[in-house]
Image (cartoon, rainbow, N blue to C red; front, side, top):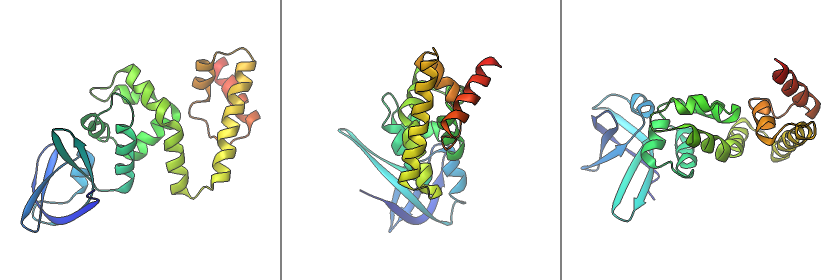
Length: 196
């Protein structure tokens, strides 16, 4: 596994860059966000990498931050999301994508070329808990606090279903709420959102 490279940025295209390392030019596929952050041609660049192996191809992807590389790894773990589509998705800032996943913002993902409604819903469903864990670790939240907040959200969901809401309705009304809120506060906010 090639974890990172450092060398001279010798070329940039719309979807890739070439970094010369020890006389060898490595082409890295990159998001538009990372391409903007990688610096000018002719300067030294230090990039994090991910090597994607298929039976007939090796592709090297480059990132300017660990956060973006982590999101890329999570995205390619979702069925129907390949490396190309994951890179297209990462043209949005990582923080914006994390917020969209946490709040269930299907529209933001549908605005990305190549992602329809079902794929957008799948991304949110499969990554909501994982992105929460990544963000919590980055923010210094303990595992115990994380478990408590996940338990509060599950209890609030069950309470809403006990009031006659379907599971998708309950999920939709809880989307975007702060999981560290109390169960009562989450249910109150969900019901006021439903009435509004």
